[in-house]
Picture 1: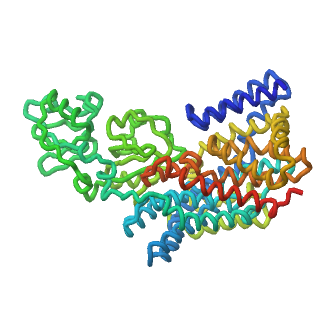
Picture 2: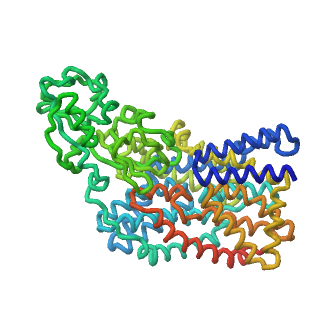
Length: 597
């Protein structure tokens, strides 16, 4: 009983940390693993060291890493963009038709590739459609995210959760999922979700008008000012680095205009001269203070627009912080963002709020959107960095379009070999990864960079918790409590309870962590009742893979939060009804598709 109490305490603390986000989710997972490992050292039979690190060698962890690489092969060869643009071309005749084709295209893509990558490709297309038809992005992007989540429920490889539960099911002796095992219910979800998003979601979502340009959207125009270096200024013949303007006044020099010459790069090491005109960014209070102390003339306090901040070789753009970016939890100053990437960050959009002052000190999180300005080639280079998802369509340097058909063939072959059970999905995915590199579709370094280590370490850290629940009898103990409520209510009620638990847990924790926690309980419950565990595992999988009621339940929701100008309540209003519909459908259809008895 002591071991059960210990595991329950670990689960309770983990859920608290997941829900409050006091620590990064992957760090919480590693904390769980380390805690269980230490307890196992002093309590034999609780969890061995080998079991504690088993998450790193688990079939699901390796398969998911391989799927990230296969998806990167499609992205780097432009295969996804080519597929999406051809489909979008079919709907160009009308707004409604285009909306339908956009959602169907994203949903189909998400069934076979990582949905984060799919949404990253479709966001710029959706924004382009928004501008073309004068539709608010608010009406498009949340449905795009939701349909990608629903599309992921249609196949084994659609989401990491599907692969994870399949592996846990095999380890429990229940059996792995086949490639298209989930398609029966997934297709129902997709059809119902598509109708809901087309007919109802567009009416529920507000019509928040898109700003005419980025400076208006972020309201940063008034933060740009032109100042002139006076003859007696203390800055004459000194570089910005020497005078420490940024640190002392929180003012950034974006450009130096010297006669007919415009200096944009290497500004911190350029010695300023008399009559230099400086385009600076900062609050008017800080700029006035700098002007007074350093001997500068404030030439203008005009509100700048995109046209004043862009030229043929300089552009404004928006970039989303990717879920696995090294910047997460750090500030722009700590990462030396300006000098690492050669572009300025002018503002940050976080959880619907635009931050324009002292942005260098803001702690960045996944889904934050940066307004950046820089030379076109540097911005395009940023688009090649997996840490950023560009909202404008930029010309990526590393796209190998001539390799596109080869990449498509490799992925199709990997899926086909697994679907027809010629090879296990783990083996076919690894073979596909090697083929991507050997054929030149992907460089080895790109393969390493494409893996979302956030997900990998999350899985590796939380998987031992499932093993501890089995070893200590915690799963069976909790299952007994659940069955006291449900065993006399029938098969539908059992499925409904596990689906609801999985949805709630996935909304509080990571969807993968929720599945790991509930799978042992589901198997133990089925064994106590003499039922087939497979339908219960399906309920857990579908619920965890389609938690949509909060912006934090899924990475794709965070990706559209800023670009769509959403509020937290938008996700609740659209996501909760859809989750309830799926709950009812699953409770009724899972016992039909996969009988419990």
